[in-house]
Image (cartoon, rainbow, N blue to C red):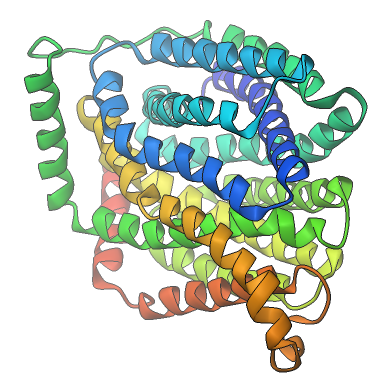
Length: 426
């Protein structure tokens, strides 16, 4: 791979770390302000559902305009939104209600940014290196997950939400500067951008994906997994903060980030061997499910760190295999829309998981668990947060069963053969 790819990797590592700090700090601020999981659930639901609805249109843009310019534009818009949130926080004007329109905006521009970014990544390397570059940039995300939460917690404790956002803005502009070293590939389109042609673009991508039974099976399975991860995203903060503080939560999330980094390093080293190997993806899914169960068993930072380590390593390897398959099979003309549909389908159930997790978790925590503590305590232990842990446990069981049922999925086996053949042909 070109050395410029590593420069791009460094710039995005810095930028994504700043973003991770901001979103961690906003999550802590929401929980400290309301004391309810349902408040965080509502904000995450808005971001997720808006992203699912608008995601395919971002893919149309990525296939019609220079992807580098689009990434920069989306980054600047997100930075501007963070500036406004920082201003409100600095002047003690920020409320949960005020965050709602920002959640809508983040839902639109974050998903458009990631869709364009994924398509752009496929432009900068050859087919033989798609799994390797996926692993490389997974390490960038892993580093952001490692440094972001603990860094965000420390800055938040001294300088508040505004201080975290200022750091985020600085890292954002640094990331943009490294993208400038790349040229945007020319995008050839047959028609002008209007509502009819956008619709036709999406229909073309949908018809293409219907023929890719392996990719479609994979993304549907991962869509269910992401729906279950929606529960985890909402349940983890209140479950942890019920027996420790923001520093403890930051430590657990940073351990998970370290695990993601280790997983990406492993993926990078064995990328040639795991290219297109869906059996590896399935085994990693099983490990993720078991890790979720382990994290629910007792109110323990150590058990939750074990959960983070197993999920981090296995989840990263699984995502690397999946991303490599998508980048290998798609070409430049369809990649933006195909990856947008991938994102939409993969995230379709996440908003429902996020929406249900808050109220259901609160019910189990404050009503159901206290009434059935004698029966449930042998499973998830005793003390505050165990109602949330009970739902965490159920999610882990469902996650494990899902991958067991798909262990011999014929479409995934055919997908493995398809990807390996494409890479062999170069």
